Length: 263
Image (cartoon, rainbow, N blue to C red; front, side):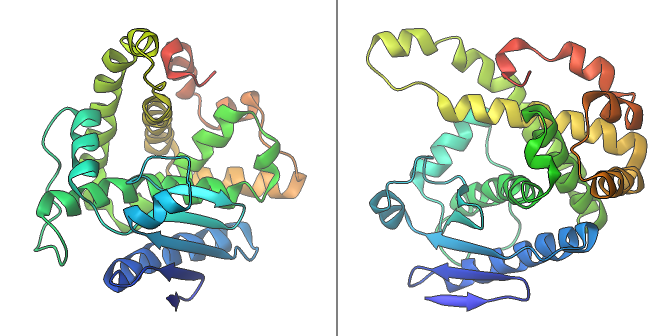
């Protein structure tokens, strides 16, 4: 089944129309704003899949997390369930933040696990769209940081009341994941898979921290000025340029733990 928003197209499994509408509203905002910032069209398709269709497609990332599947399409979970709730409780080490209201499908915790997935969806889509610019040629940490800067700017402009909630989520991830990674070698010796998702989440949590530091110092204006400079030169920003715009990131870069896998 399909639904067309202003800027995005959404395909969804039967029974997931409400979820598809929610995803459309969020992605329309992201694509519309980045399109204005970058002065370019940014076509995007989202696929809202349930666990069965996710597994049938053989997608590499665990169900419950968004996954870019091509330059212009992203897979999104259609619903939370016991498995997504359990994973998120492990990753943040506490009860899931309340979503507010009454969920249309499943439990309140199921819905909260989708709320957390959509936090990462915003970052992932920003990275996908910025990847169509000169940023695609930048160092991986710069691509990640600028993706978070875009996402943080959007949250600040359109959902400022979520600032504390978002900071808590990523702070909990930064605290919970390292002890899990310390046990990875033991897991591997037992024939269990590596903790790839946990490593990815930890890197994202540290990148979010850097982006919030930068945004607090320069706001959306500095971020948009950086984008404008990049567009004019058609070259990705260098480390020196990033630090010239955001001197506050110097200590953050120096303090990044090796386990974060960013540098």
